[in-house]
Length: 412
Image (cartoon, rainbow, N blue to C red):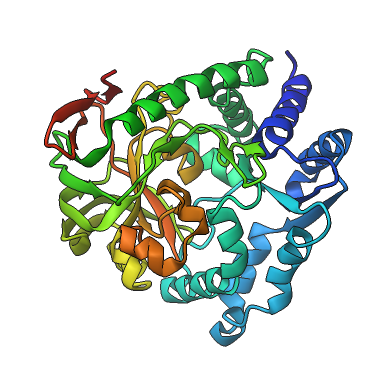
């Protein structure tokens, strides 16, 4: 198929299966200005499905860097209420809303800028959008993230090529790992979702108390699981039963750790981009759920800023299992972007847990979730910790050991 034909398939899949707008719903699209053509293609699909309206919020990463560099911190942290209302007004209106994020990141957009300033500005924005975040964290609306290449991103991944060559290589890689290349992403994803549901359902049938993760790089981590935890994966669904895929691509089956029952050492296996800069080769030690020691060969100060965001940032809110056979890992490409890299390796998330990862969690208060062990924080940052030799053993509530991962693969 030609690039144009694949691009059309990609847009159709992202809208129809990814965000899945319902008749009379408003689709909100967040998109960089340089990807206006792809946003228009997605809008066409949404209207064909009966969307009430498509509202596009355009951004500009290069302008964001200029603003971050030249704007005073007190201005950056003064996030106006209209920004959150621009989402809530649609979510609360007739028909409701769903949101599609089209990202094309520069992994080092803020490299060289004041890290403290960038961090505080990010925290302020996340805090100002906490009511809207509760919609997405609780799956009260359909939401989906899908990626489109940018020249800086492609050049970071494929150095030594011209910008055009790098972008073309990244497009091909994205089409491959998102199961678009063969021209039937909807059919291939239905098969993939069925496999993920099988793994998810088996984990739920075990009623695990904890898991023990080990790798030859020094990872030796025992993760107690939240009370009444539920393993999730593949598709999510809203209270109305509308199905969606939050991340395209997705290869993970995940749940909530108990915020106070994590002990041991975990090593990072892929670089992590935080606030536009890289954290590489990190090591983190947990005691009773809390990070007590940390280090990194690059970005250690940045890692410290992340962990000091608030009390919950030193605990984890998610443990996700991803086999090394995932297409993202088999592509043997470091994407420098969490959307892809987290689906190449098992990962943990510093910060908030998802309410839906405990039984009845989406209707619980923050205090009730904390009682179950689900962590709370203004941040949720996924970091990759899985390796080709990762072994994971689960332990049921009655003490029975169950092999879950062997040499980085599902053991069942």
